[in-house]
Picture 1: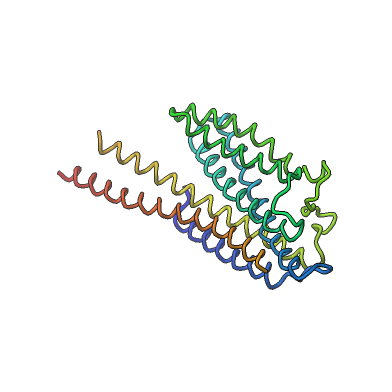
Picture 2: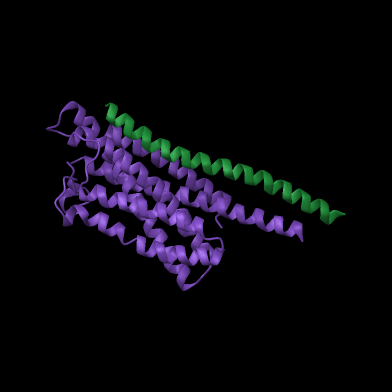
Length: 230
Length: 46
């Protein structure tokens, strides 16, 4: 378990990097050219929209790895890690979907369209909501962890499909994460963009560490209750 | 500008709700933990 000091350092690092990300996105990043005033402001949404989408995929990847580890070596900590990371993944998927929809209104003149990226990302969200429904439906802890692990391995297939959907199919969604094209951004924007990605990754690590601490506290309370009852 | 504000508010709201829920649960658990530790100490001292 993480010590209190490590958690404090992580929380501070996340807070500082978030302030930095806001500064980079709203102040340091240059405005896009050849866009209307409304579109120029809306374009700055990508500095938070893409990192939240990236975090959701990272979180589901961690769930996928933890699920494999649980099946290889059935220890409760892998199941706890998988569940906590999936919770964060769902939260960030909702954040990315909502912010993307708000960006789409001035950019595409619609809040929502059944574009391949949006459709596959919605499927990802539904699959991981179903992951929690599956967990809620099984009482016995070991069985629940095993079933959830197998399910999350299959559910993860939807994540790379979503990532590649804008490269495989005709879509109106822009390709941002393309290092060969300077991330598809103009000069000066890349620095702010990469900074935001790193800052949000630090936030994910801090949130996951805090979520894991909560789980270990729940375990400690349960163990103490059991000791008191004996 | 309103789209930018709306998107940032939504993202931060989700993050804050997550943190707030976590902290509230942790605070309740810590109170319970203290009470259980006190009860255990009291039982062992008798």
